[in-house]
Amino acid sequence: MMDDNEASVLIQIKPIVPQEYEATGEVVLKAYRHLLGDSLDEGYARYIGDVSARVDDSLVLVLKKNGKMIGTVTFVADPSSPMAEGLEDGEGAVRILAVDPAEQRSGYGRLLMAETIRLAKERHLDALFLHSTKEMVQAHNLYLSLGFLRVPKRDFRPIETVSLLAFRLPLEKI
Image (cartoon, rainbow, N blue to C red):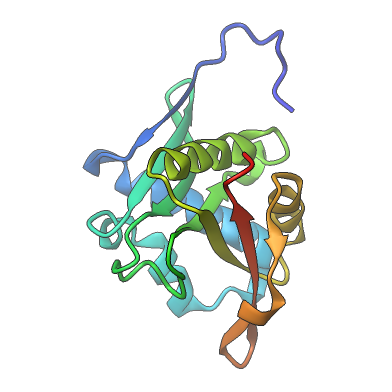
């Protein structure tokens, strides 16, 4: 977790600007390659690394530590967005959560998720929904600790070698 004694650490979470697209894409690819290794499909790697392709249809947040890009998450509030895969009425989506491997297990993913939850509540959404590959156990533990519930009936396989697990966070009690 973050050390409270680090008084000089400045954490900033904000919407992305064009000058940050490249650094954000690099963080995403580094994080996903760290977690998925050789199972990260190159087509999917291009997709998640291309931050500019999703900024018009979603809100891409970045997390900076002392000015250095270390994390990102994509929030989708519009069910008609191309980024809103499989959303039901009243749901928002969490997509492409990534924290630099050197900064993982320090609470930064939790901070990004907390901001996403805040934004979803601000928009009066009923729930947040996400898919995660079965290999991302560390992320699953984070989601479950935040109150997300597994929704096996919404699991799916976009391709034969990839299994995506569904998670949903009802927002009415948060």
